[in-house]
Amino acid sequence: MSEHRFATHCIHAGQSPDPTTGAIMTPVYMTSTFVQSSPGVFKDGYDYARSKNPTRTALETNLATLEGARHGMSFSSGLGAMDCVLHILKSGDHVVLSDDVYGGSFRILDKIFRHQGITCTRVDMTDAAAVKAAVTPRTRILWLETPSNPMLKVIDIAAMAAIVTTLPGAGSPGGAFDPANITLHRPILVVDNTFASPYLQNPLALGADVVLHSCTKYIGGHSDVVGGALMTSDDALAQRLRFVQNAAGAVPGPMDCFMLLRSTKTLHVRMQRHCENAMKIAAWLTKHPKVEKVIYPGLESHPQHALAKKQMRAFGGMISVVVKGGLEASKKMLERVHLFSLAESLGGVESLIEHPAIMTHASIPAEARAKLGIVDGFVRLSVGIEDADDLIADLERALG
Ligand SMILES: *Cc1c(COP(=O)(O)O)cnc(C)c1O
Image: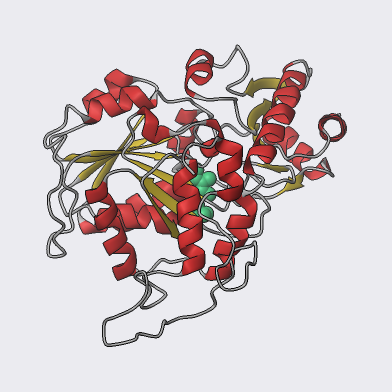
C-alpha cells in the first residue's frame, strides 16, 4: 500500500475485504475474548480485546499509514493517548511544553503528573532560544502543538527536533524491551498534530518521535466520536507505549474504531474544504470594521506565515478573531450566530464558534491566558464544510 498517495491511503490503508464473507467494510468485532486452540495458542496476537481487536488493528494501520509511521495505536480519547506517553516518564523527569496548548494537555501535567514528581515548564516555542533556556539535563520530553490552540502559533518542528538531539541520552536505540523497566530510553519530541491533521503535515518526517491526535477532531470529523491516537516509527518506543496501554487500559471500543475508519475515508476531501472555507472567511474578516485582529496561518499578516507555508500543505480550518468591544461584543456575537454553533471542540463538518477564556481554556490560569493574548474579545472559529458564503452571511449578521 505504501506506494500510494494520501487520498488512496485514507480510503484503503489497513483495510481489505473480510476474508470470510467478502464484506468490503471492516467488521465491527464486538468480542472481548478470542478462542484458543491450545493454552496460549491463538491467532495473530488476538487473545483478549484490551490487548488487541481486529477493528482497532485496521484503524491503527490506517492512521499509521496516514502519518507515515511504522506503528499506530488508538485510544479511548486524545488525553488517554497523552496519559500513555506521560506514563513512560519517572519521578524527577521534566517536560517542556509549548505555552499555548489545549487546556486539558496542561491540566493532566499540572494536576496529575506533578503529584508524581514530574515537572513541566511552559515556554513560547516560536522562540528557539527560550526553549534552549528551558531545557534541563532532566528534560525527557519536548511537547508541542502546531498550529497551537487558540493562538494558532506555528512552531518549527524540525528546529525543536534539533534541540532534542542536544539533550543527554539522545540517540539511544533503546535495546531489548524489558517490562521491568519501561521508562523512556532517550529524550523525545512529541507533536500534537490534532489541529493540522495528517493531511496538512506529518511531524515524524520533520524529526518528531511521536505524533498524537485527538481523533475527536478532524480525524473523526463528524462530532460523534471521542478518540485518540499515537504514531511512532521508533520500535523501542512503540513497545513501551503498547505495554503501558495494555497495562493501563485506555483502549477504544470496536464501534468507535469502525466510525473512525469510516471518517478517515473522507479526511482528504473534508480537509481540503475546511482549508478553502477558512481562507475565504479569514480574508473577509480582516476587512470587517468590528474586527480588531484575525489570526490565521494563511494570512500574510500571521507572524509565522512563511514557516506555515514551508511546513504545512495548507493552513487548516481554525481561525482566531479578536472583536472590538471586549467581552460584551464577543458574547453578543456568540449569542447571535445561527449557522455557527456555540460549542467546545473543533474539526467537525459543522462550523463551531467559542470563547476560549470562558470555555476551552478556562483551566489555564488567568495570568497565563492574558500573557498569551487570550483577551475578552477573543473568539475561536472551527470552520466547517458548509457553503463559505452562508458562513460569511452568518458572521456578518452576528457582528452587525
Ligand atoms: C481536544 C484536544 C485534545 C484532547 O483530546 P480528547 O479527545 O478530547 O481527549 C488534545 N489536544 C488537542 C490539540 C485537542 O484539540
